[in-house]
Amino acid sequence: MRKLPLVLLPVVFFSLLHLASAQSDKVELFGGYSLERIPPGCGSNYRCGAPQAGPATNMSGWITSLTGFVHNSFGLTAQFTGNYNGSAATSYSTVNRYSYQFGPAYEVRLQRASVFAHALFGGVTQSSSADQTLSYTRFILSAGGGLDLKISSRIWIRPVQLDYERQSVPVVDTGGPTPISPIGVNGLRYSAGIVFRF
Image (cartoon, rainbow, N blue to C red; front, side, top):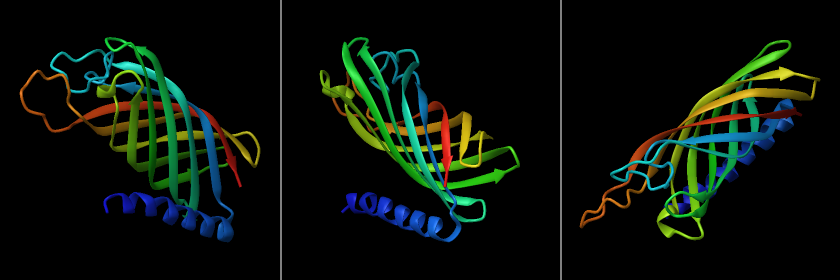
């Protein structure tokens, strides 16, 4: 039953997106590069919350998002990311991270530029083929914004999008006799790319 809202969320979002495009023709498609900074404790060994936390780690990848504006500057965004790091220290396994988030967005458009802010909620899935203690799926939220610069009426450049991330992660390698509840950790994501407006 808990998975049902996650299934319905994209259906509701794309229904609203279709309504927005039909009424106002205000849809943005963004795609580009993503750099995710994993906080200490989720760093070199990816074992979040371990007694001896590793250093922060940067993971490169991609990002794409779709935003439909339903009323003036207010819209709804669906954002998907993938970040990767090969040969994680300690485990020597490839680690992949994917996030899928949805939420409200607000944009202020000027003649040659626009600024926006959003709050996104969803899930993050981290996987490792060699070490199952590095694999989990947890809740993640992001809050941030960015700047778009106009190239043409349909094409814009996004030089910067910054997002603060907060996620729940399992605690492993604690050495204790009983499992410990997941903890919350902070992260940061930088993104840049191209925006298409329809």
